[in-house]
Length: 138
Ligand code: CMP
Image (cartoon, rainbow, N blue to C red; front, side, top):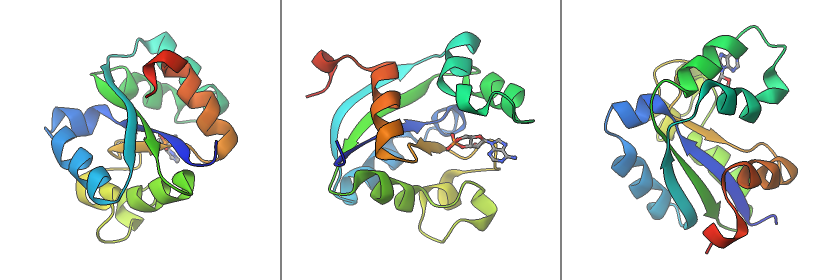
């Protein structure tokens, strides 16, 4: 489905009290929220979600961080959702992200960068299914 993507408000942004600010920005950008919940991932669940990065040097730090506190997982809908959500998030490293993007505003570092988004329609479908059953998507 190329009008849906998967997003996470990561533990750093949840800890900093930015859930509401980020959801406001999602609304203002014209996305419809089709599913949303707060989850506290186990290390195993974080490792499963980021399995494609298993061989990367940052994998241990990434999965430890993602399981360190709750995060918000979401199904977002808009035409061209994958690109639209990635554009709203900005570059992976907040230092290089454009002004006005979520990572520029709410991210601290490449590891603690406030939000995640799927990188393709194919991965969006996989990532949505990792967290949500069909019944949970309205
Ligand atoms: P995300 O979109 O969640 O997908 C993989 C994550 O790995 C990425 O955002 C970053 O937060 C994280 N990460 C940590 N260190 C690095 C790094 N050196 N290069 C790229 N991504 C990194």
